Length: 110
Length: 118
Image (cartoon, rainbow over all chains, first blue to last red; front, side, top):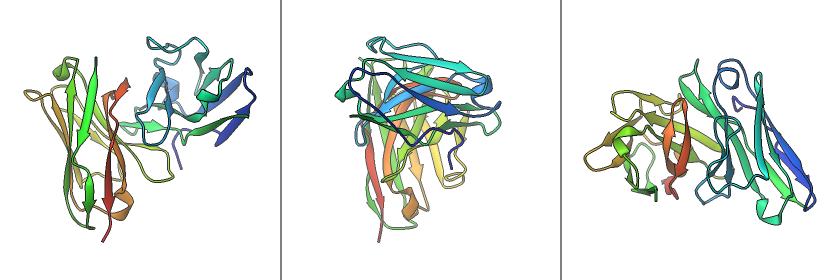
């Protein structure tokens, strides 16, 4: 059971928009920045969003992040087949003194 | 270019030990916290351990506390994970990542595979 809660899967058609939610508590999302990662198993996870809503250099603006209270959301617009991957939210948990991840969300582009 | 290269994975028997290494380049290693994250077969990402830039502060997941030790050699730009008393459930791909703690993990290595089996 992950400390952060994500939906196991989401799907949408090419060109459409999808959002992935991440729910936590005051000890993690509520008081710390959230990061989002794209991961294909066996490859290096890729940082998509840091400090809850900032994109690293090279990440297209199709990817966006937001945070409200103890929840965060990743948005992806203009879906492409190449976006099919697992997506994880993560943040520091001040009570656990540990980094915590969501269970991951598998994105399928139909 | 920031690069992280893990090594040291392999097949080990239950209760055995293994030391993973992560060679860093392209950034000021001693100024950056570092972390280990793993992914067991069919499972999600699990944070394992983190260490401050100086090496003076370290953190561990409850699942590995008392068995794993994180360390770093800033003169060699290398991060380590000493894993003792290994269990089948430690079988995973282990990634090292730049960052951690209250900072994002922004760059990750390709991973090294650890298999614990008799």
